[in-house]
Amino acid sequence: MAKPRHLSVFADLWCPFAYVGLVAASAHCADPERGVQLTIRSWPLELVNGTPLAEEKTYVNATALRTSVAPELFSGIDHWSYPTSTLAALSLAAKASTVDLELGRAVSMHLRHRLFEDGADLSCDEELTAVAEKFGVKRDARDLDLVRRDYDDGIALGVNGSPHFFCDTGADLFCPTLDLKRDESGTLQVTMMMGRLERFIATCAAA
Image 1 (cartoon, rainbow, N blue to C red):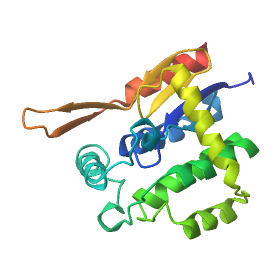
Image 2: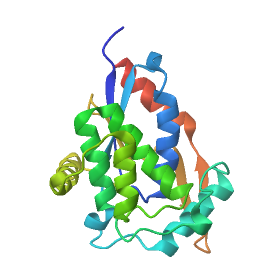
Image 3: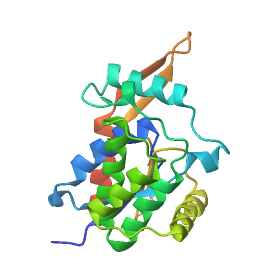
Image 4: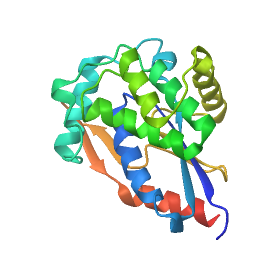
């Protein structure tokens, strides 16, 4: 079998749009016959925006996604302990990726599941310690440097937001799974675009 192409996704942990896209992409790339390996990298929106994501805005967007395109997701948002920061959690996922890319993806998706499905506080050190122990990852205060490295790489690549997909061929696509619009009243209108994601991954694999 030919060596798989590499697909990197820059995303923040508390971005609900990224969660939907990564669930879809993870399922699509799980089949080795697809010929694409998925890596999740940090795009820390609290560094991008200079402030953490507001809980109310995140909740409204997650609710809109659950109502329109992802009824099977976001079961924990009505009782979550909203994190004050995702930098430590992103650091844990980034550290896992230095051990093994698939381990990093697994940790990253588990953290998202803990937030959006279980309502866990990803800024809680006890929560992150438990996840690190579950996956056998040794945490270190210097792990934050890995997040900043991803952030700098994302800027150099021209990341537009969370999630932004990049193939190692140089092709890229922002938020391929969702078409997001707002109506005249400002209400978010969401359409699932799985075909767009599948075509992007297929093009990446075939290159």
